[in-house]
Structures are given as structure tokens and as C-alpha cells.
Image (cartoon, rainbow, N blue to C red; front, side):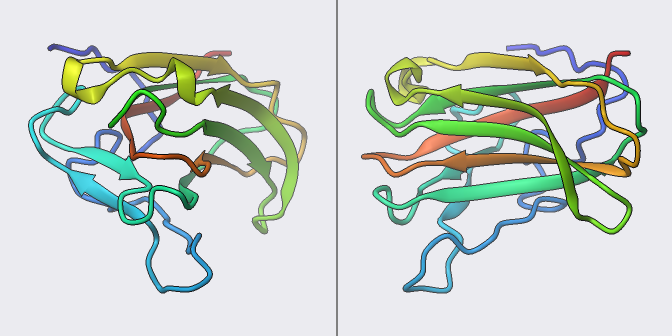
Length: 169
């Protein structure tokens, strides 16, 4: 499958081909030191050779990744990403863009996209779905945006690939 990449993608390592490079993986499990994510390369990626697995070690527990990118106040941005699951009832996924000031403090929500578990296709059947959202205008004082993906608790792993975040106006 050939996927065109929008010009000006602000996300580094959007297809996880470099593993978790440029992505932050906070601890989501209180009883361990693991992040509950992995890089999967089983030949089922949306594009390229790799994809991110969320909820890989403990499917009933949450998982999260995020990346912060520099942006300018007064602009709008588009977030695009592809999602698939290991089974038909994987888990819900929340994608958000938070506006941050120059010190890294949250100053507003740009966009929030909820993907219910029941709408996530099977990775083994090529069930990738593209999701998109346009942010609200970045407020005065915005220095960066935090693009995050949070997988809720569920029964199986969710896969993420081809994350794009670019200015549209």
C-alpha cells in the first residue's frame, strides 16, 4: 500500500520505523516499570515495516504515547493517523492535541478524537482506518503542541501508524 505523506509533517518518526525515537511513553501501570507499548513489525503495518502497539503487555491496562512539536499561535492544524486492533473489541483510543506555552504548561485543547473500540478494524484483515481532526486555532502564547494517543483498558492491543500533524491555516 502506498500512502502519500502531507508536506510539512511536524511529527518525527510518524510510522515508528525508528522504534520509539521522538515519542514519549509515560508509565501507565502503577505496579511495574513498563510503558505497556511496543514496536510491532509483523508485516501488518499500515505502511512501512513498523507500527506501534498500545496495550501490548497488559491489554486490560491503559497505554499512552505522545510527542511535542513546535507550533505558532493563531494557526490551525490537522491531525491524521491510522488505527487497527488485534481483535474486534480491542479498546477505545483517545487522540488529543493540547496547546502548551513556552514553559510546557497546558493552555488549551486543540482537538480531541475518541475512537470507540467497536469501530476499530482487525489488523490481521487489513482493517486499518484513517482518522482525522482539525484543531481549534492555537491561542496566543502557544509555543508547542502535545499530540497524544491514550488507549483505554480493553481486551487486546491497538496498533497506530502513519501519524501526521501539519499546519492547514
